[in-house]
Amino acid sequence: MAHFPAQRPRRLRRTPALRRLVAETRLHPADLILPVFVREGLTEPAPISSMPSVVQHTEQTLLQAAEEAAALGLGGLMLFGIPAQRDATGSAGLDPEGILNRSIRAVKDTVGQSLPVMSDLCLDEFTDHGHCGVLDDAGEVDNDRTLELYAQMAVVQAASGADVVAPSGMMDGQVAVIRQALDEAGHHQVPILAYAAKYASAFYGPFREAVDSQLTGDRRQYQMDAPNRAEAVKEVELDLAEGADMVMVKPATAYLDILSDVAEIADVPVAAYQVSGEYAMIEAAAAQGWVDRRAVVLETLTAIRRAGATSVLTYYAAEAARWLREDLAPEPPVQHRSSVEQPEYPRTADRADDSGFPPVS
Ligand code: PBG
Image 1: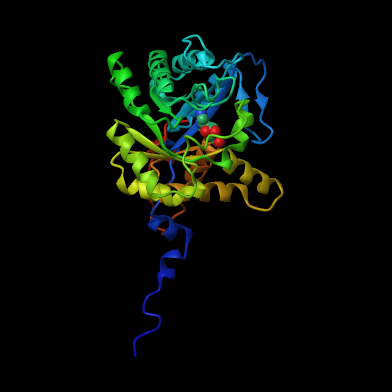
Image 2 (image 1 turned 60 degrees about the vertical axis):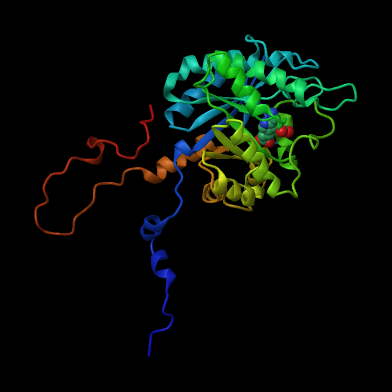
């Protein structure tokens, strides 16, 4: 009689080393993109109460965060600027000397080519009404007038040195208009990371504090509606047809079905954004001792990668990269049990580092 059960999937789960051998998904520091906030006029970094350990940076401390991100081998930085003055058209976002554009320059001067610097291409941090575009007479966001501003903003960001521009406003046609403006200005080499399937989400709550948002009301007239799944595919197809070099799904954890669909159809890298509310919920539960913080963070990042993300934007990027390095830290020299004299191998520290991670300075 055949032994029962015939199949024993548990065999490959028996030891940590076997599980590591057969893991279908891995996390690497280069998969992680760190969103950072820089606020004009600050002299000290300002904590964000709903996002413990995340700060609004001064222009100086931003550079330290960028250096650290480069040393850790992160995939990139996503830069958000918070201006001292706002107006109806978000003009501080288009000013080459505005907080975001001058910070792009300063970060690029600091990290050079060692770290891709991405810039949020949106007006909401710069408008006095907090919307992602300009308003028409009826008080609604005017899609096509907003596109003109996005086109200018893209060129200013590229001229400031942005390695990637990331339009997050969910205006129709934004990728096409930005691509055309960049090309006409000679920035053919600057890729667009399109927030393609961005949902109107309550998970953005803490971000509103992070950027001191002026918004009253919501963004439901332009960001996607949570019940919709097929529409995300349409949004991504449109952005790809308009020339998106990478696409994003946002938020991440509650939208893994969307991410999976998008990864299925996209022939470009797919990013997912673990947003402020996702961060805040993990922090709150961990602070109570209700979940194991490190384990939950790595599990969520792994799940987001497993669903199909090539990159994950996460406020945990630097910390998670440190954990991943720790997990790979060289073991003490192996003690051979054989009594035969072992040849002298170079000690681990003398061998070339083959981890693929750049050295941490
Ligand atoms: C808009 C923008 C938002 C976020 C990133 N870009 C806010 C919004 O759309 O309301 C949210 C990110 C987060 O919650 O972590 N420029």
